[in-house]
Length: 425
Image (cartoon, rainbow, N blue to C red):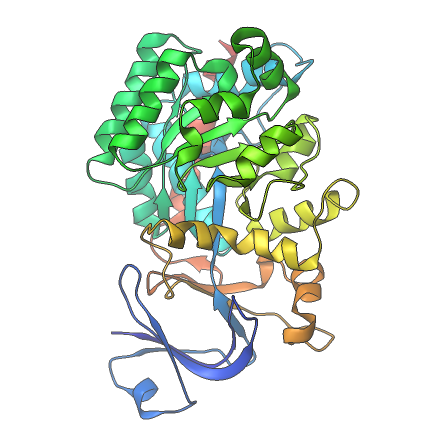
């Protein structure tokens, strides 16, 4: 049975051409869509699930270029034991305290609630970067299964780091290798300043063995550069480059704030992708992102702050006005570049049959010529009415269809209380 979106105002996400049409949506991973004339015999077949989209806009769904499932239960938690005075202390007293307290059930519900939030905000694919140093084993499998339940495709990694000792770093490598046997994935590293040469070498070897890429935070704060210069006598991107991290088009470099011209040239001349996380950078007071000299392979993420990619695009555009080379077209290009990353590297789950239906009543004309203005100043996640993932309707009339959201949130509230208690112990 195919889904038919009747009388849709279809927006081609690449060309921004508008057309009024019926859309036949094929089910299955990387399935196709077919645009047919309104009320054609094909769209009227008996077995079709028909959704009337009169007055609605339909376009490709969204994707998150960098997320952190493990942060899902942090919202509203109390103050840390010590008020952080810099970025490293933010990590030590908040995020590294939190991730040490996660257990398997917390990981599962963090993933469920994150997938639900992504779906309702229009994203049907998530690239995640996970950490749970005292619950490493099976953590990627738990997250993957939770996302599958909701109906959101994914590209996962485990955040390998030496910060909790070499044994836990080894567990991260083992978890990654095990998960990669049956799933598409990346090799995750925390950041240069918590990864030794030994661990970095092992991670790149695992990347090469599985023809994958590295997903790593890069120069998010100046402390990362200072540590690399002090410890290794070189800058972060130079170090990663020497170990072969930049040799894969699947590699994702997160943040990339504090880079010099030579590093930017190294990134630009490689096939790697940079993911910008503006709101997280603002929240942590680590600086402002600039795409200058980094090339065109820049995409957007949320860094676990939320799951709303339309919001991330607006933040990147507005905060970048004084520091970045971003404009209307490039803001949209960065927003959509995650699809190009996935397609170029042949990852499954982001095919044509991933769509959003937007209930967007504008007080002004909306067309190809002024699309960017509506994208930045009009469209919001509250306009998302239906979401189709791999040809299946996972959000209908703004409600998730695949799982019981009310029950999941009830459990996640209890787990968050347990987590916060462990963090204060």
